[in-house]
Length: 67
Image (cartoon, rainbow, N blue to C red; front, side, top):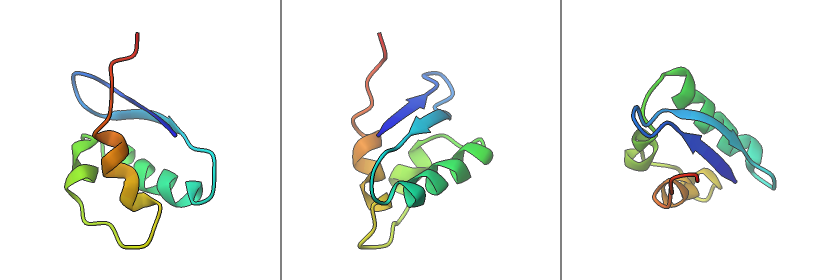
C-alpha cells in the first residue's frame, strides 16, 4: 500500500493498493479525498472490526517524506 499526501495541506493526493481488501480500503481513502479533508480524519475515525480498513491509521501514522 502506498499513499501520497500533500505535506502542507495533509490532503491525500493518491494511493495504490494491491491485495485482499484493497477495494474496501480504497473507498475509505476516496471518501476522504473527495471531502478534501486531511488524512488525519482517518486516524481519528472509528473503523469496524475485522476489516482491512482498520489498519489505515497504522499505515498513515508511519508516513515519511518522499525523497
